[in-house]
Length: 146
Image (tube, rainbow, N blue to C red; front, top):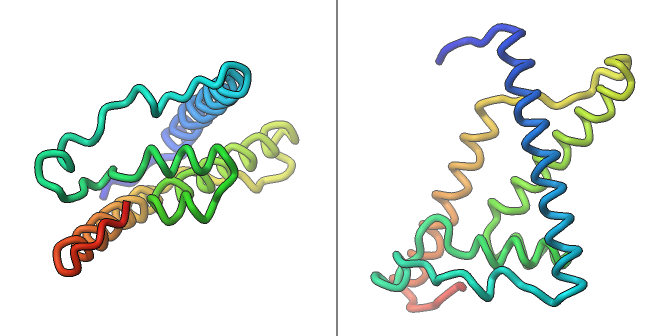
């Protein structure tokens, strides 16, 4: 694995910070619009093509329901629908919060979380295990977990 120098780490952190703040603003605007108008994006999404064709789950199946549950404050339901969603939400929230605190303190409070490849590997493992678990239960016991 290739080592990154300090400048590369700062660039990655800056890009992720800007993306995270942008994503947070987009989520807040969506939640506001949803509250005011009753608009729900999940009503306009197509069902999973892989699941429709095969009857089994893809690694992303359950993700939309998990995001909706998380937006409604149902952390446990979100975790049960798709554990990657709350994992990513907690990771992103801590990244944004810690980076913001460090930046506002002008680096006097050095508690900022920094990007590490292991966070991606953990997320990938969660995706694979979740997909395998749901498909094994479906295959051997005929139980649909979604």
